[in-house]
Amino acid sequence: MTPVPSFDFTGKTVLVTGGSRGLGRAMSLGFAAAGASVVVCSRKREACDEMVAEIVLGGGRAAAIAGNVGNWSSLDRLIDDAVAAFGGLDCLINNAGIAPVADSSAAMSEALFDKIVAVNTKAPFRLSALAEPHLRARHGSIINVTSIGAIRPSPAYPVYAAAKGALNILTRSQAMEFGPAVRVNAIMAGPFWTDISAGWREEYDRDAPSALQRIGRPEEIVSTALYLASPASSYTTGAIIRVDGGVL
Image 1 (cartoon, one colour):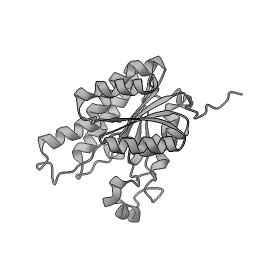
Image 2 (tube, rainbow, N blue to C red):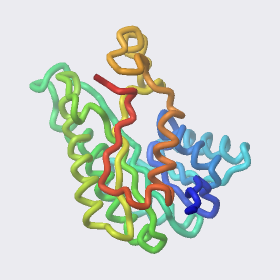
Image 3 (spheres, helix red, strand yellow):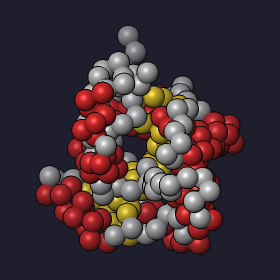
Image 4 (spheres, helix red, strand yellow):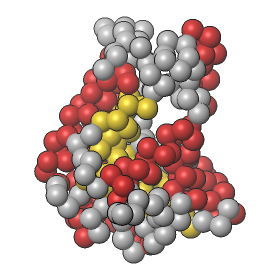
């Protein structure tokens, strides 16, 4: 019988953007618990250091990199520093995202439009391109975190939905470009119970327009990320996997 691949990431290095809070925090902790050395990237150095301290306290290995992924010119340094932290890179998780809203499409400023696209689409595109040679050396993988909003857009966040929709397309395109050595997949996340959802989660949990009739806990995204980064998904690339509680 063929043994089932395990989720043992001992000796592997994972870079998580937006890794200090929300879904990124859950994935940073999850990969560290699975044995990976985790590079935590976030805009605020203090938040990165706190996340690293928590991982180390739990017996894991981690390094902090502060940086704004919306700044194209800084992304080369981010990848270089991540590779240098533990001597290589096995998985890039493009998790960082922003979803500011405007009162209407007419009220959306060009600066805000560009900022949303820069963080949600341009950054994963560029980081993946820069990380690919390092990942290729280790037959690694890329995981993009997109949103159910990409296929269920709302008037409240049209630019965010468009940016995440574009990331879905980039996932499939770069899977073809980087294959067969590097696999590229996406997790299309639904509503999760994070600090970011504080303004709407009570209303959502009450109405629960999903098959599971609740919003998700951040740790519930971790197993999908572990699967996509592990040999268990060796024949999976260009996939966009919904983790959304069955949004209707």
